[in-house]
Every structure is written in structure tokens, then in C-alpha cells.
Image 1 (tube, rainbow, N blue to C red):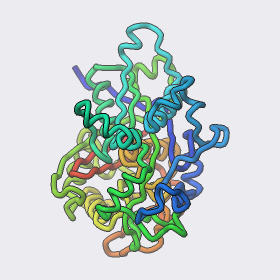
Image 2: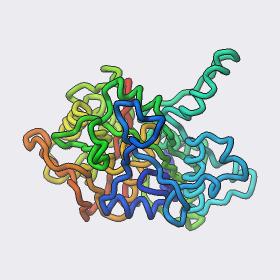
Image 3: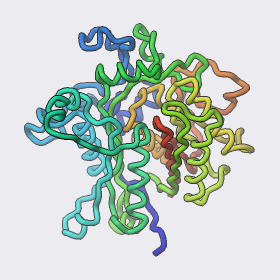
Amino acid sequence: MSQRRVVVTGLGLVTPLGVGVNTVWKNLLQGQCGIISLADREAFEKLPVRIAAEVPKGSLEEGKFTASEWLDRGDDRTMAKFSQYAIAAARQAIQDSNWKPETDREKQRTGVCIGSGMGSLEDIVETAGSYAKGGPNHAVSTACTTGAHSIGDAMRFIQYGDADVMVAGGTEASVHPLAIAGFARAKSLASDYESNPTEASRPFDSDRSGFVMGEGSGVVVLEEYEHAKKRGAKIYAEIKGYGLSGDAHHMTSPPTNGQGAINSMRRALEIAQLSPADIDYVNAHATSTPVGDAAENNAIKTVFDGHWDKINVSSTKGATGHLLGAAGAVEAIFSILAVKNDILPPTLNLYEQDKQEFNLNYVPLVAQERKVRAAITNSFGFGGTNATLCFTKV
């Protein structure tokens, strides 16, 4: 059978910039940042890094998160936080898509593909003793590439006829002393920013020193194109390509030439049947680490060689921090909105860069209005797992 076209018909966001797609997108374009200091919290007082990007707590009317507004009665007391975020984002996306399966076949042809890079650290810590006595527990995820892999896999389920509609994305609730201690020990986190946390995440900037732990969820509704057209669904964009690779170079660092990222991007373009000249925007994984940002930049310049004057690149992690397993899904939604609205979200805290090495348009500080026919978004995880998604106008 021929591959079926897949489009995006629903979006949902729970992020450090707020809750709800309109709120988050507005705050992102206005240059707001969701990174805060944790210095006044007892649980974090002995840690070497005490900043993070948290989902703001409050009512949905304020653009913030309260679990009881999204969950069935009592679930907010028993359900892990990362699951709460996923349900909130999924409910937004489903409502946005206006998909209401009623027949058994419609329900059977609707699937779910939502992952998490770390799951609930609070539950892991609290129940470690019980598991040690009661037996092993096992789950599979793909680190910081989880959200992108979930959306890409969901696309394939539709392409190859396993489903007509998929609810897909990633979720994470990792702002916990154990997580921050672990990543600080690996020397991956930005430090020395307690007094000015909003300046900590600095993708592509010469003073970048590490990423900032973040939390949240991004969920999309993907749908077979003819199915969406038949029911008159609004369509944000088409997902045309999905590339993935494994470089297995180092546990935490990519190869300096970005070969894994090169493979991932080229495969996404090949599947999409697009050339580098067709892409107007790259939403970079760039987490604000010295090695990672440089490697991805090398990869982008290799893939788009001959088109440096036309390609636009930004990293939204200056605003959101790094949402780990949710990052790929949240940034996929930012890329979809860039395609739909012809606006490039900014890279915050980009004040200085090596002009020889970093010589593309990285959309510094302020959003830019540009025609965006097609965009790709990159996600890379520890261990060398890479994914690229490609979205286009329909």
C-alpha cells in the first residue's frame, strides 16, 4: 500500500512558559523565560545547582497549572506529576482537534504514543525500597529524544495503516533534587546563575556553560490527511519527514562533526522528499552546552551547505530550559506554529558568538517574521540517540 499523508490537527502544551498553546506561544514570542531560582527551597539547599524551569502553578485562567482542573476527582493525589502534565496536554490537543470518536471502529483506529525520558523521580525515590523487596520494574524510553521519537513513530502508525488518528508526544517532571544532583555530577548543568536564572540557558552564546533542567509536556493529534479533510478538521501543518540515527560516540557528548545529527536530518529530508533548499527554519536541539551546540551547528552547516544565507536557526531552550523527554514534543509544536504563522521564535540570551563558527541567523533575542514553507526540529539524547521531524505547510 502507498504511504498515507499525515497532518497535525490538535496541539496541547504544559511548559515553564505557561499552560495552553496560545499562552505559551505568546510568551515565547515576547521573549519571556520560565527559569527560576530554587535557592529558597530546603530540598535543594545543599545542591551545587539551584535553578530550574518549572511549570507555573495556578489556575488555567491565569495560564498556569492546577492538577484538579484536568484530572478526575482524586487522581491529583495518586497520579505522578509527569502523568498529570501529559493528561493536561493531551486533553488540550484532543479538544483542539475536535476529534470525538463514537463508533467502535473510530475508537479502535485512534491510538496513543506518549513517552517520558525519566518518568516520575519522586515515585522512584519513594518506592525504591518496595521494588527492592518486591521485584524488578522495567520501562523503555529514549532519553531526551523521547518526544520526537513518539511523534515520529505515531506518524508511521498512520502512514502504514495501523491507525487513522494518534495522540502523541512527551512528558517530564524532572525538577527533583536527585535529578539535579545527578546531572550536576555529570557536569551537564549551567551553574552560577542563582541571582539571574533567566540568563542561565544560553544556546549558541559564547558564555554557554550547560543546560537548565525543565519540566512539562507537549502533545499533538496526528491524523490521516483524507480523514481530517472529510470531517472538516483544522490543519496546522503536514508532518512529512522523520529521520533517526544512533551515533554511539560517547555517553553524553556527540562527535564534534555532528555526524549523528547529519544522518538524522538527511534521513528526515529524504523521507519528506525535500531538499535543503526547501527548509526555511531549523528548531535546534541546542541545550546551551559548549560541545553539543557546536556539534549541532557543524551538522546544520554541513546539511545546509550552499544555503547558509537562507537558513534560519533558533533554540527555544533559552526560554524553556531543557525539558528532557518532553523537549522534542514541545519543540515540535513550536516548529508547527512557526510554519503555520510564518514567525521564527527567538533564541534568548544570545549576545555573543564566535562569528567564524556560528555564522548563521540564530534569531537572537527577538522573534522574526519570515516565510516558513517547511521546518525541521532536532532532538538528541544521551547515549547518541537522534531524531529529526519535518513539518510543512499543507
